[in-house]
Length: 142
Image (cartoon, rainbow, N blue to C red; front, side, top):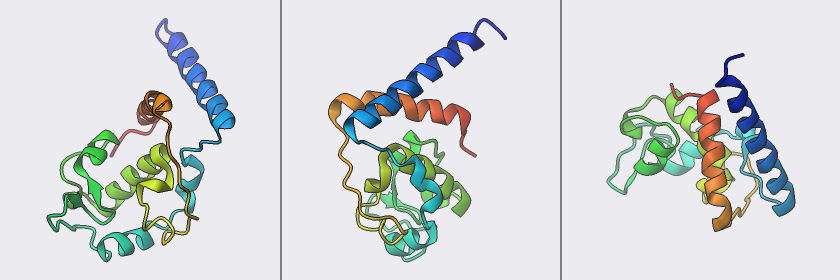
């Protein structure tokens, strides 16, 4: 193993342990376990009438109505309305992992998840961003 590999593995393990510990301590779950349960077709139907190319001028784009900043923060490239359905779902899974179902407050229930009012304490947001970046290393955008 290279000299860089060992610290990276140790850092990733430490962040994972810290995130799990804080999750248990606070009851916060970012939503990773929900990704395989979400019916993105139903969410898109609720958000945009099922139009994966939606660009209505409301500041949200694509079938899942991404804000441009959220799209880019979670690895999306270009405008979500121009991305394929598969690309939108890949980014949506990362958003769901980072923000939980609260990212789609009105339509997550249409996707099959119970309403989960997750409010991330300000102190934990840097940790959430770090974990999301680490996930992005292992799950690069397409």
